[in-house]
Structures are given as C-alpha cells and as structure tokens.
Amino acid sequence: MTILENISLKPYNTFGIDVNAKYFVSVNSVEALKSVLALPEHTNYFIISGGSNILLTKDVNHLVIHLNIKGIHTVTKTETTTLVTAFAGENWHEFVLWTLNQNLAGIENLALIPGNVGTSPIQNIGAYGVELKDTFVECRALHIETQQIETFTNADCNFGYRTSIFKEKLKGQYIILEVTFKLYNKDYNLKTDYGAIKEQLQSMQIVNPTIQDVSNAVITIRESKLPNPKQIGNSGSFFKNPIVSKHKFNNLKLNFPEMPSYKLSADTVKIPAGWLIEHAGFKGKRFDNYGVHQDQALVLVNYGGAKGTDIYKLSNLIQLTIKRLYDIDLEAEVNII
Ligand code: EPU
Image (cartoon, rainbow, N blue to C red):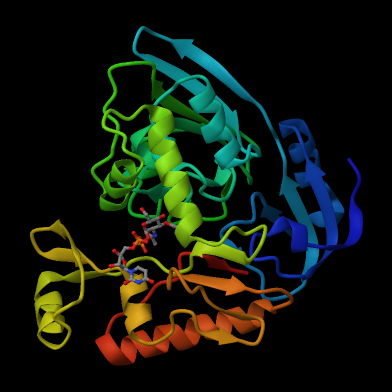
C-alpha cells in the first residue's frame, strides 16, 4: 500500500474533471483501509469509490482513499432465492452482469447504472420501476470513529427516493464495505410495466421476456438516452425529480397544462425535472466544453476539459431559472465536493 502524491482524479470520477489529489491511496482490503485510516499524518481524508455521483470543484489538499475492495460470493441458496454478497469496490454494472450470468432475478432493471456496489445503498439507486431497496438485505459498514464493523438491515437504512440514512443522519460516519442482496432463482415477477421498457420489449418483439431480455431492453433505452461516461463525462441525473403538493401541482397545471407528473400519495406528486429543464430551454444547450445533454435534460455533461466550477455554476443557473419559472426548488442528486 503506497501513498502517492499529486495524482489527477480524472480517471476516478465519471464527470472526468481533472483536479488534483495531494495524496492518494488505493485500498483493496478492509485491513488496508483500517491501516490507512489509522495513519496519524492523514487524519483528513476523502473517500472515492466509483466516482459516479460527485462533482469535483477543487483540488483535494489532503488524502484521497480509493475504495477498491472487490469480490462477489453466494451466501446461501434456497429453492427460490439466493443471497449474494458483493464487496464495495465491485463495479455496479459488472455485478448486475454477474447476477444475470447466474440467472438470478432482481436487479436486471438496474443495468448500466454507473458507480460501485458500496455506494449503491447511499442514494438507493433506482431505475425503471426498481430500487436498490427492493433486493437489499443488509450491508456491513465500518464506523470511522470506533473502527467497528456494523451491520445495517434494510429497515435500519431508512431508504427513500434517492436517499438513505447514510446520506442523512449518518452522513460521513460510515464506510460501506459489502452489501448482501436477496435475488430470485425462480417464481419472480419481472418489472416490465414501466412505459419505456414495455415499448422496448414490444419493438424487440418479445412477449415472454427472460431476465436477460429485460436487462437488454434497459441497456438499449439507457444507451439511447444517457451519455456513456467513457465518451462524455457525466454523473447521470444531476438533480432529483422534485416532489410537490397536489395543490401546488394543480396550480402549475393551470399555466403549464402539459406538465407531466407521477402520483406519489394522496397529496403529493413527483414532477420529472427533465421536463422542467427542457421547457426552461436548457436541453442540448452547450456552453464551450460543458452543457446539458441533448437527449436527457436531467444530465449535465463535460465534453472534455470542463472545470467542476463551470458545471456547478450551470447547475445553479438551472436551479434559479426553475425557481423563477415554476417556483420549484431543484435539489442536486450529485454530491458537490
Ligand atoms: N423528460 C423531458 N425531457 C427530458 C427528459 C425527461 O420532458 O429531457 C420527461 C418526460 O416526460 C419523460 C419523463 O421526464 O417521460 C421521465 O424521463 P425518464 O424516463 O428519462 O426518467 P427521469 O425521471 O428523467 C429517472 C431517474 C433516472 C432513471 C430513470 C428511469 C431520477 C433523478 N432519475 O429519470 O436515474 O434512469 O428515471 O427510471 O430519479 C440517475 O439517478 O442517475 C438516473 C439516471
């Protein structure tokens, strides 16, 4: 385990922002992580994992710890279910592919989500009608202060829409080391009712989809709308879809009759932020080497060489415009560092 100096973080964040870490270390075991955390000269540090949900706006003047602990194993298997544990540093999509190879159902709708297994519970990743919490059994996490490893059950995590206890009450206090999922060998219901999936399966002329068919449909949809971070730097959805009261939504409807929404409860609705941003005129807008993606207005992009501060300023401009036009507060989904 070597502590490197003056390392560019460009390969470690999917936005592809080129900032410098004064010190950098990659750890591939829990023991290595613990010994780095115990270094008296590096009490100040920043953990980076898949780097898919951060916008780096400045150089990091202390230690960056790259969490690279890998491994996937089956814990138990019954006739219908299989418990699988994956370590934090496993790439999320590679993990989804592994489960598909084993013919295990449960996370096929979550194919191609950028990031690593360890960060997936923090914001309860989700797509096409499925959220991480639907298959999450428990995770083990290192309590930074006491160095104890603790187990968090599904209920302990307090999962919500793109959030969990690790993003709220316990923010910054734990490092997730491994996650256990309950997947299905048989008797599962594939979630294909989300509009885009239904249409994609129809166009693939598939009537009785397999797990692989569903994930292929998801991959096709995502590839058609979302930029591949390997080609164009981005962090997926930059903002959360805002949740407003039904009363407020009814008033908005008077001025914007086309505004789409999803009913959440008797008196709350979720509005697609992509629609708000598109109708505010930002979709496909390019400022020099950064901008708003042309096929999905919720995704901010770095065309190459953009600064984190440029993208941050653009996100502020979008927030101010959405507030002015619709009186809605857009909350960033991405962590600004
Ligand atoms: N829309 C527009 N213009 C746009 C984009 C979207 O009008 O440029 C409207 C359309 O009405 C569309 C609706 O927004 O029907 C929903 O769009 P989409 O299905 O693309 O989903 P989303 O709400 O924009 C969410 C997640 C995505 C996830 C998709 C699919 C959030 C913040 N984002 O996006 O997650 O892949 O649903 O389930 O909840 C991510 O979190 O990084 C992410 C990509």
